[in-house]
Image (cartoon, rainbow, N blue to C red; front, side):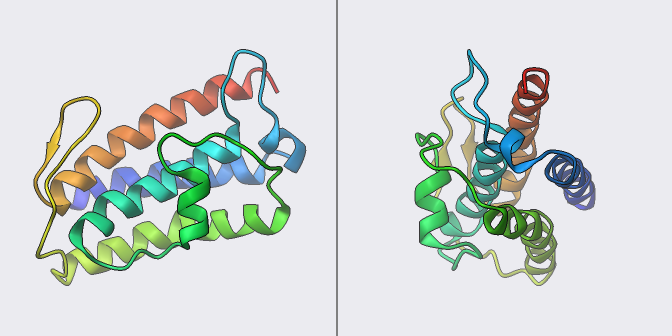
Length: 151
């Protein structure tokens, strides 16, 4: 699992740099031909990781219900994200995965509600969820790299 966390932490640093290197206007812009923007993808990544690992383990998530409602699967950007929200996401990008690693090492993920993803992967435990999560994050990182070309 050490490598899974290393991969995710490296990915999160790349995403954090996207937040640092783009203006609020660029983060919120939805280019023609796209359904979402840079900041929605980052919020979505944070929310999905928390839902896959914590919620399906029956544990409290480190994010608000409001954030879940804005960025869960099936949502789209419906408001202009403020700098305060960007700053919160920058913090959550790093802290959620750091805390997940601590919690994993402390063996708190004892129960898990089995879940089958849209792609047909069946997640049977938190370890499966973490492994699938970095695939999910890579997909959205790829989308963001595409969006960057048009903003």
